[in-house]
Image (cartoon, rainbow, N blue to C red; front, side, top):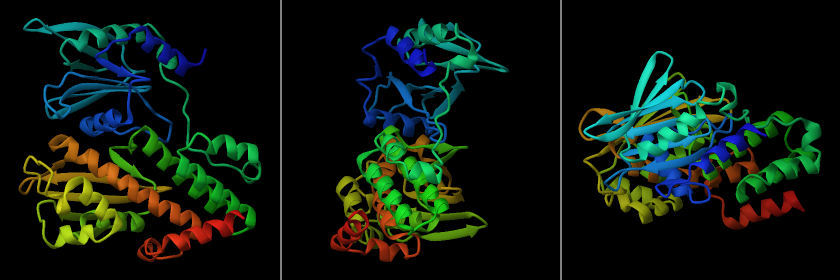
Length: 370
């Protein structure tokens, strides 16, 4: 029996109407839980969310847990915590004023998960999980593929790996395969594209990825900067260090910046969701956004901080709903840019690339696939 199947089977033994698991676990809830916890998924090993239990009494997720196939993350008020499933030694029930909570014991650490009556469900699940040896509690890693040239020349391999992606990403993988076979690109370029395509698919199907505390984007820095400016308009200030670019934006300025954002297709999408200049967001006085970008192989790492005055803090702590919407809209821009890159390559300026008409995009697609 496979480890991942065993974990899913154990989850099914603890069915509860208050805990959302497949088939009732929606991408919308997963994205909200990721944003509210501040912990994205490790897509480099194929992490996925198994269940979410919410005991919040307000619209934002403020008292909940998110269970993945590798860890448990939870939030209490403005603070978030996490524990690796493989490191938990045992769990016991605690009580505060007759309300149960779960004490989670890991080497050198004791954590408390307070989710009201959902604590009883979580206690039972984790207690059963702890009966399993640590090595079998989590599934094998499912890394982003780095195919060989023979694999990319094999239709069966491409079909098997493309079919598990989102529809647009599936098409992108076939485009890259066609370009490699035509001799337009070499194997290293094809691998780089495929890594970015798979990362984007995992972001869009499973929830945003994170590595070492940084959100993950499939775009290189220059393309991602354009995507962010399409949503936000020009930044108020930009600072640059080796492999780190930080830009600050105003979320409360409905004037020039809002008009600039709405002047692009992506900005129009943002305006439809959030109001021109993001003014329609019922913010907790979050008026500024700082976006820090750092390049990594096959991806860009993103740090998102918000501020109500001068102090910047993680947006996941200040206003998770803002982070959820920002990551969703950014995902749309990333897909549009990445799709065009698969067709036209890395040579063109990102602004020129996004300026291509739908007819030009279709003509290029027809030429490559005919």
